[in-house]
Length: 324
Image (cartoon, rainbow, N blue to C red; front, side, top):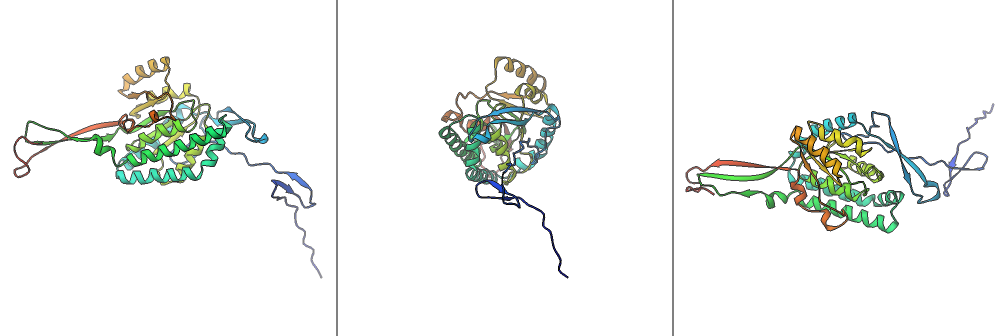
């Protein structure tokens, strides 16, 4: 007796992006749309608020015009991100400067490998192909620039100080701790990279709010971080409304410093008043165009550093006299 085995009809994708069913009829393939989430502690949760906002996308191809639903982060998301950042401080600050440089350089390599995706997303946000390519190139080069500074800024900015007693006196740079970062709204990638890199180069961890109007490259950037050697919690990224997230950052008692791009007069008044209550350092980068040379400097590393001065007595045979 013979058996007849029936097979279900399955759709097979063709080279032209269409599918064929069992009868050989072509059907239009439905692409898998990307879900843009936030990034906390090395993972990609959805916002706890369940809220989203829409960002209009330009059509790179006819099928890509429309809007993207972006997580609208809340105060609770800020708190979760700070907890993750605080938990990562000791491990990241405790690594050797050379090792931090290695990790940042590896991230630069991965950014280069995914440059086509960043170019595409910048074009969805309205950049031309040339503008997008230029921005990605500058962003990668800037990241590598700071990777090189990881094991050099201490030698440049630390010092051995003269004294009038029998002591050695050393001043060194130490990380502040957890830093809040409010990225410029006008830049999708270069502003983000330019503000995160000096913060983590100096051994800090951070809670970052991406550009409100151009968030896609920021989320893709965290996908690079998640698959690199960077420990979870060193960089935590939130998307959402600047007006809703700025105050939770400055009022959070476990954030040690805050760096804010393009702060308005009203925002500065609020930030300075709130920062006075918890003695938080607030930095306003004086950069008009992040794609230019003014957007990078080793002095940006010092913005979120503390100077630690150590006195050490000079024993007999170590130099004597008044010390040096």
